[in-house]
Amino acid sequence: MNNNDVNAILHEFDIYPKNELVFVEADHKYYLNGQPVPSVTTIIGSAPKHFGFRYDSSIPKFVLRAAGDRGTSIHLAIEKRFTPGLEIPERFVKLAEKHHGFLDAFDAFLDEHEYYPLEHETRMHLDGRYCGTIDAFGDLDGLTTIVDYKTQSKPSEHKWLLQLAAYHEMHRQETGFNYEQAAIIWLKKTGEYELFVYSRRELQEAFRTFEQLLAYAAKKEDKVDGELANELCAIFNVIGDFEPGLEYDLDDVEEHIADSYRL
Image 1 (cartoon, one colour):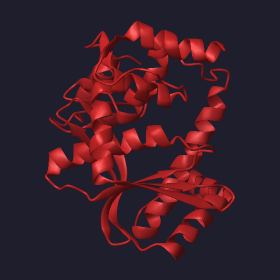
Image 2: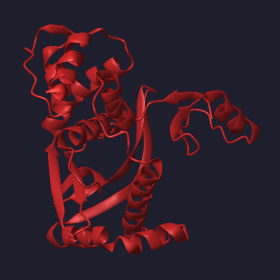
Image 3: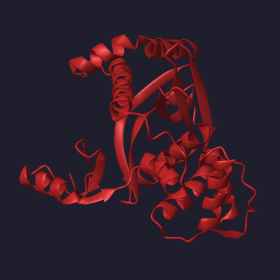
Image 4: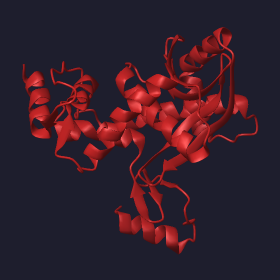
């Protein structure tokens, strides 16, 4: 399904609200006034494509889809705990029960922290430049917090920080409210969890990197600052030796990352 197909469907059924961010499940994309808007995770995830990052493309689609459904079921189960009237499709209810270890992990988190989410699954965009769905806003241990739940098997702390930084700034500019912190609640199937908390200052600093990554993903720049080059290397667990304050050709940064994976 291409953009024209999506737009035609939206217009035909009169479900194309003006100035409202729309998520189309068919192609898993967001649209604003007929134009696709890149999501935060897409912007961060697109970097490997530009850098020739060696990821495991051999994973069958049904495996990726199953992992996505599992994550969705856990997210919905958590949301229902704070929104009793929420209706969840039966298949997600059963899937959450099957993977109860993640919910056990969330219970362990609640036993050790004061957590009061005020809103779940909020779609937002920043002037049409990028968008995303924020898992939750609320109060965590006495501080206003933007929260994201993770159920993946391995941590991606650098990517997580960039994601939360983008959400934090998007919410600040759209609402005028500056949350004190942001947090990742990493739930594990073993019933354990880890909490990653980032201060407002850390988020602001990381957002500067995300802005450059956004510009890069849109191919608005042929050069990047040494600081961003090192940040991009860190995303792919490669040691960067670029000097902040100096500009480098993207081709050189790409080659550095690619060479590291050939070693």
